Image (tube, rainbow, N blue to C red; front, side, top):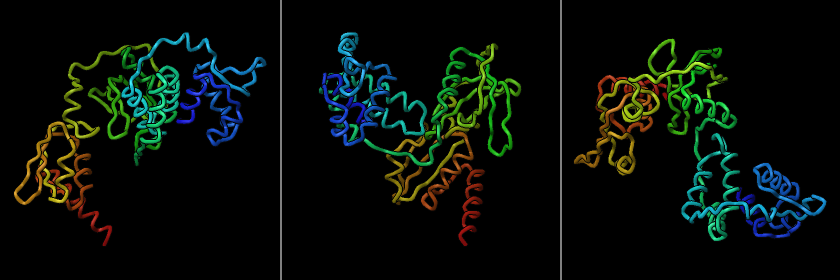
Length: 317
């Protein structure tokens, strides 16, 4: 990505370096530079060559810059765009499109900000673990967005976990949302009523129908967002968890739920209280802390955590 951004800057500044010189400058092969040039052409940037059309001395058509509207992006805005690209991992949807869009914007920003963006490319990094692969699902996502906006019922082919084969059913999509790096769609299966959440990566096929739908008046997105601990919505309960003193700083510095309250105990432990639903996700989260977390209430979840820890302990005997 940094090479393409730098290449755009060089070509926009009217440089007449040869393919050999560009390859030497970026410490790569000529074939790689040709591939980058084709990618820029595919993105709509008019890279031209000599009178015969050969790209031995590539440059950007001078008329292209005159046709561009001014885009007065400042350094902070350029950094924000680059941050968005860097935070979009290779398995996330639209990574290629986002990179191409940034390359186009690089052609519009002032030289100073453009150089800053190239410097930031090498200063920002990060990674996620346990992520799903959404690359190649852009078509499904765009169809869902279109159906949500136009209120169009869809026929969805969905492969649920623990099912041997996908099932096919009508689905009214209400909203796409992302939780912990996973992408989901909440809507309604018209045959059953009530809301149903689908994992986007498990959608095998989607077809928009001519039927329209109305969103259930009982559906309240803000309530769903506030009351769910994760993806699953269930009737919220008061949850109280006590954490050991050595883990107290890590608990205080994060928001675990919008309704949370944190109280420091005399012995240095902290007590986290929130109101949420989604028993499975709450239990799994508490157990992930091992002996550092002590679930106080509700009693029903406390019992399930105890049983889960006992079962886990037996695996290591």
